[in-house]
Amino acid sequence: MEHIAAFLLVVSCSQDLSGCREIPAPAPLFEAYDACQAELPKVLGAFRPSSNRTFARCLEVDPALEDDYDQLTWNVLPNGTIEASLTVSSVVVASGTATGKPAYLH
Image (cartoon, rainbow, N blue to C red; front, top):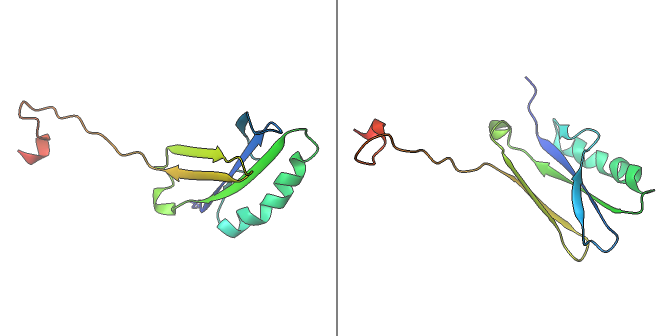
């Protein structure tokens, strides 16, 4: 199995940045972060003819957690830069015992 080392995020915004949306990247997953970075100019160039402003960013992926990432958050700032992160949600486990302690602690 190949491991993922980077995820390519592409976001399209109106000219005044008042409305932005994620758009599908041609190839969103990469085995190496450097390969993702090398793809950025080509991806951005493909969207240049549109009237929207396009932003792209490579996000590093920990191969040990690649199947656990479940939240992608991003924000385009007024200065035209994009902040983004991939995270793993914390897991909440409900107790099935009368004491409120997880069953494995009894």
